[in-house]
Image 1 (cartoon, rainbow, N blue to C red):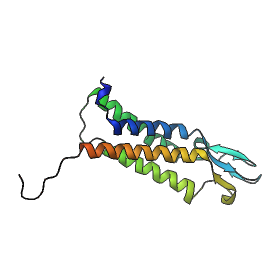
Image 2 (image 1 turned 135 degrees about the vertical axis):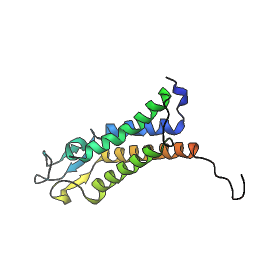
Image 3 (image 1 turned 45 degrees about the horizontal axis):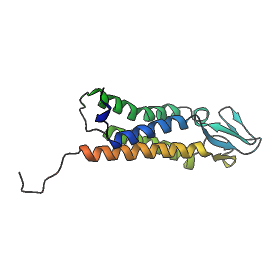
Image 4 (image 1 turned 60 degrees about the vertical axis):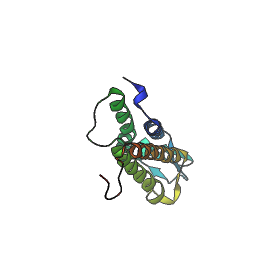
Length: 153
């Protein structure tokens, strides 16, 4: 195992994966009044973690959080990849960001939707997804094949 094989992009993506994984257990939603309910969380003035609030998406976010760690493990062990490093991690980061933004801004879970507000754990998840994306883009740019101008062999 050679940790010197990891470059800056993979380290950034790995930190982002850890942050995204931890964020699932932080407060994602705040419940405003006594009528607010969210998967077992009941108001008033309480909060609900991402793990409690999200039923299926929590597993998808957990998989997206583990993806950069798996890539780092593959690189440290020296295994060959059949795809450019960082591309699959970028795809999972985009999926995680899409799920996070959708469930935080567009379609909040729980009823009534007007009494459910986003808490700070959602912002941590958004930051973790962005770190994964930045790190994977950084890595895929470094490992991409250089293009030559037309007419050059």
